[in-house]
Length: 113
Length: 113
Image: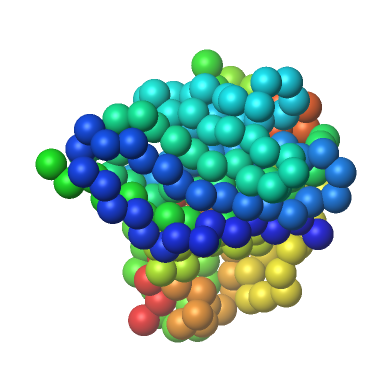
C-alpha cells in the first residue's frame, strides 16, 4: 500500500522569502505524485503533478516541485512567497494507472507580511 | 468545462438521524467518483470510490454507505448518524487513471449533535 509523509505540521515564512513544503512517499513501482492546496472551508485545488519526464514540475500560482526518486521525495517550492499563499497543502501519491490517491496529513503554511 | 457540485454545504443533524449527501459532475462522462472525509481540518480519508454505475468500493468499514444511481451522481448515506460521523465530506472525480488527478467539490460540513 502507498503512503505519504509530510513531516512538518506547520511552515512559517516571511513574504518574499522562498517557501518549501516537504513530502516523502512510499509506493510500489513508479508513482504519480500530486500537490493540492486547500483554503478554509473549501475543497482541494490541484496545483501540480509528476507522472514522468523532467524531475522539476511547474504548476499553478508560481509553485514548482522536484521529484527525487532516490530520496522518494516530492518537495513543493515557491521562490517568493505571498501572504495569499497561506493555506493547507497536501501531497498525494498513487501507483501508475491506479484509481486511488493517498494523501498526507497536510502542512499549514503561514506567510507573514 | 467540467464542474462538480456538492450539497448541502452545511448540515447539522441529531445522533440517530439519517444522512444523504449528494454530488454531481457535469461536462464529462463515466468519471471515477470518490467520497473523502476530512476530520479536524487535516488529513483525508478515502471512504468510497466508484468506477461505474452501481459499482461501489468501500475503503473503511463504517456507518456510511454510498450509491451511484446515475453516471455522474454519487450519494453518501447513513441510516443512523453517530457523533463520530461529524466532519468535512469531500466528493471528487477523476477523468481517467492515465491523467490521474482528482478534482474536488467544495465540501459538505456535517455536525452531528
